[in-house]
View 1: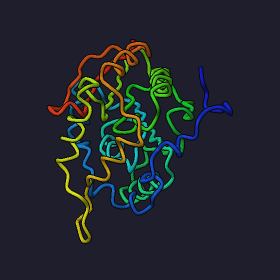
View 2 (view 1 turned 180 degrees about the vertical axis):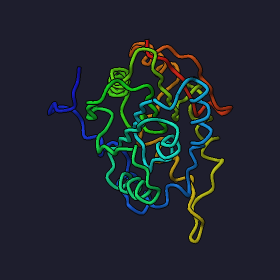
View 3 (view 1 turned 60 degrees about the vertical axis):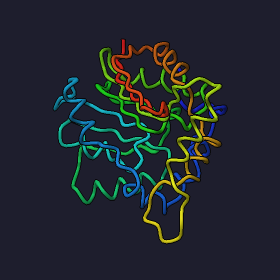
View 4 (view 1 turned 180 degrees about the horizontal axis):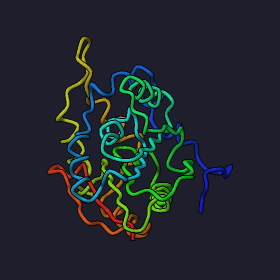
Length: 238
């Protein structure tokens, strides 16, 4: 099993996108992106995430989920490849006095899980930073962190349309956002979506889902957005 020390493992920070290396973006991230973390925590509690649960939040960013989960679980390991994102989370943890969240500067390919097997691995809008080959490796590594029967909650930009629909589907998605203008409140703009499509590695549902199965997961629930751009999975490690 890959342990992240190999010299041929790619630089995940380079893959992570310009914005994730930008302190200004990190400071405004919570203003432009609401992960719905409280709803996610409630849903995962319904699936059995209890007070003794050990959670690994992969690609935690500013830690919206980690902070929301902290009061109702035993421990959260918050993992991110971006120092500036983790700095924002560390400031939150200090401000809130949350002692059961530990931060790890690492990525999907380099995080080394030294604790007992986790009950939940959570990842939102992060896996797409890796090319497909490395996504498959990352999913296998996440399965290795989990106990049998443990949960994977994976949400991402995952395309559900056919390749010959690409231009129409993606242009329609881009057209729902306005161009950025001077003085605008922080928000996603058309250029951000164009950059995502051009420079990042979102794949198709019908490619990602076999990767999940091959990594050792059973997909218990898959929810797709109406525009077939986003997907959310609830998986169980076999």
